[in-house]
Image (cartoon, rainbow, N blue to C red; front, side):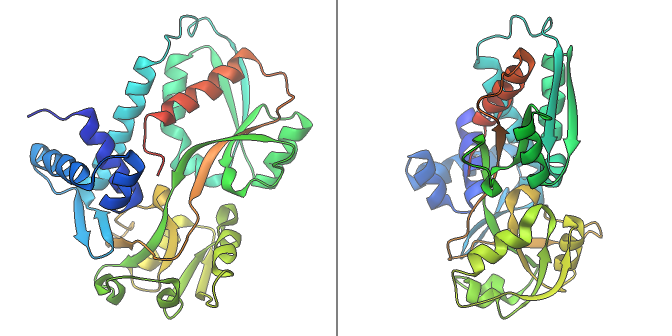
Length: 303
C-alpha cells in the first residue's frame, strides 16, 4: 500500500488542529474520512503517529518526525504544480528580508534552502530584529519584505500582510501531569499550576491579551526569552505553559517527554506571514521571494 497525498494532507490537518473533528471541519470532509486516512497512514508506516486522549490527539515522537516530512512533501508538490519558473536561473538581485527570532529558528530555514536552490542567483540578506524595528525598517525602505508574526503586526494601516501559516497554541505539560487525565482543560485549571512564561517575540504580551479576557491569571514562576529553557523546565515538571505548535517538540534537550492538551478557551493562533509596504516598488527578486513562500505554504495545513 502506498502513501497518498490525501493521507498526508489529512494527517497534517489533524496534527495542526489537535482534534480529528476540527481537522474534518477545516478540510470540509467527514470525521470518519480523516480517521480512516490517519489509520491507513499509520498502518502503511508501521508506527503510531498520534496518541489519543480525551482532549483530542497529540503527536508521538514518530508523528512529530513525519509531520516535518509531510509538510516538506506538500510544499514540494505545491512547487511542482505551480507555473514553472522559466527564468529562475537567470533572475538576479538582492532581497533584504527582516525576520524575528521565532521565524529564524522555527520557520524560515527549510524555505530559504529551497528558494536558494530554485533561484541560485538571487541573494537573500536576512536581518533579525524585533517586530517594531522591522516595521519601521519596512516603512523607511530599509527592508524590502519581512517574514514575521503577522498576528502581532501593529502598523496594519501602513503595511500590507499575508498570512502563511496559522499555528495553534496548546497547553504544554510534562508527561503524567494530572491535567492529562481531565476530560477538558480550561485556563482556570492552568491558573492553579506554576507557569513558565516565554517572553521572546512578544509572547508574554500575547498571553496577557487572552488571559485578560478571563478572570484568571497565570501563576508565573519564571520568565525567559529561551524556548529551549521553557521546554526543559516544563519537561522537568517545574511548571506548564501555553505555546504554539510551530515551536513544539516532544522532547527536551535532556530527553524528557512533553505532552500537549487542547484548551477549551478561545486561544488565538500564532500567525506567521509576510509584511511589506504596499506602495514600495518591489524588484522582480522580491516578488519571486514573496510568491515562492506563498506557494510553498499553500501546500501545508494552515491550522
